[in-house]
Length: 343
View (cartoon, rainbow, N blue to C red):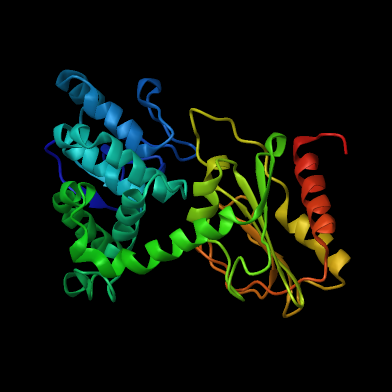
C-alpha cells in the first residue's frame, strides 16, 4: 500500500496499519503478539503470515480494512516485523517471495532453522540497525533508537528481495561466523542423547564427552531448529560437574494458530528448588538462576548472573553438582505442577 513506513513506540492515537507488535494503536493490526486484534481471516502463526494473507486480499478489501490508516508501523525492529512491513507495503513482490519471507520470519521470532538462507536473512536483519557494526553504520550514527530502526527498515524494504534470493555477500560479516557456529551446534546435537517428552512439549539433550568444546553450548537456533518442542534442556557433563541450560521458546508466548501453548512452569520457584538441592542461594556468585517466566523466551541455568534475554548462547553456565536425574525430576515436577498433573 502506498503509505509511509516507520518504527514508532507510540502513534498518538492515529489510525495506522500496525504490524507484529500489539500496543492498542487504532486501525488495522496484523500480529501474533499477545493482545493482538488481527482479523480472524488473516490470522497466522507469524505476523509475516498475517501480512501475506492481507497482501493476497483483493485491493478493495485491503482498502476497506485499512480505511483511514495513515502509515504502516511497527513498535520494534526485528525480522518478522520487517518481513511483515514489506508484505504490507509491497504486496505483489511479497507474494512472489512468500516462502522465503515466512522462513526468515520463523528463524527470527521462533528461533527456527528452516534452512541456511533463512538463518542468514535473520542475521542480516538483526544486525542492520547496529550503529557500530551495521553495513550502513555511517547512516545510523547519531540517530535516536526509533530513527535508527526506521532507517534500517527503509534500507531493507528496498534490499530485501535481493537478500531473500541469495544476494547476501554485502552483509557477510553479519552472518558468516554465526552460520558456521549454528552448523557446528547442529552437528554436535546430532551426537547427543535425545529424549522427547511429548506431553510436556520438552526435548532433553545430553551431551556425550567431547560433543562441545569446554565452556560452549548449543545455541537457540540449533535447539529449536532440531526440535519442534517448546522447551529444551541441555546437559553438558564436564570434569567438575554438569552444565545445565533450560530454555522455553516463544512458541508458548505468541498467539499461534497451529498449536496450543502449555502453561509454563514457575521458573523462579524452580530455581529456588534447585538451589535447595544444590546447597546454594540465589544471592551466591554461582547459583541456579531464572529469567522472568512471563518474558517471551525465558531461561533457567546454573551459573553466574550475567545472561541477557534472548541470548543465542549461555556463556554464564558453570558446573553443577546435581545429577541429571535430580535436575530432570525437578523440571518434570515443575512442569506437571503448571499443568496440574499428578506426580
